[in-house]
Length: 126
Image 1 (tube, rainbow, N blue to C red):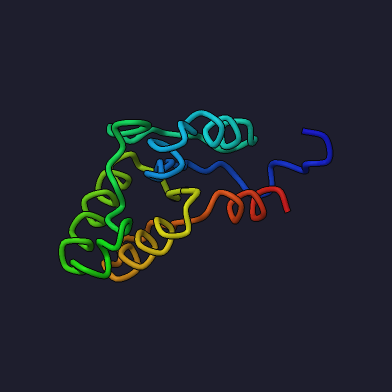
Image 2 (cartoon, rainbow, N blue to C red):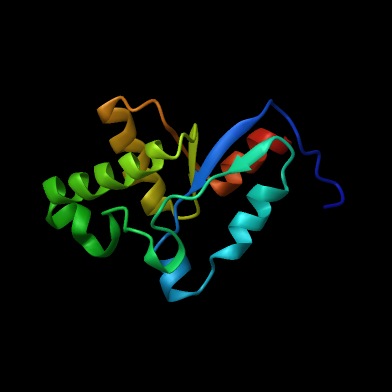
């Protein structure tokens, strides 16, 4: 916590998408949540399906390349779940999830920002 200038910006509601590799393969669930929850002004809200029950973003394992339409459908469903939380930002820690969810959110005009955890920290803590 030393050296981090937290609290840049006002209050904001975020939700976290658990990447398949980081979560189910490596068991990393709580660390990103602790980081997000520790930032002043940040309210972390959970999607109904989270941690080991989280839905895939639809990008992993070559699925996006092999089945682009189905991949977009999976991403759309995950984004809808994120929107239902009332979050303004969906944070994740995987570059594949980031690209998949960000591009799909933009294509659908959802108005939900999708950010990498490090990107979010830079913006909030500068």
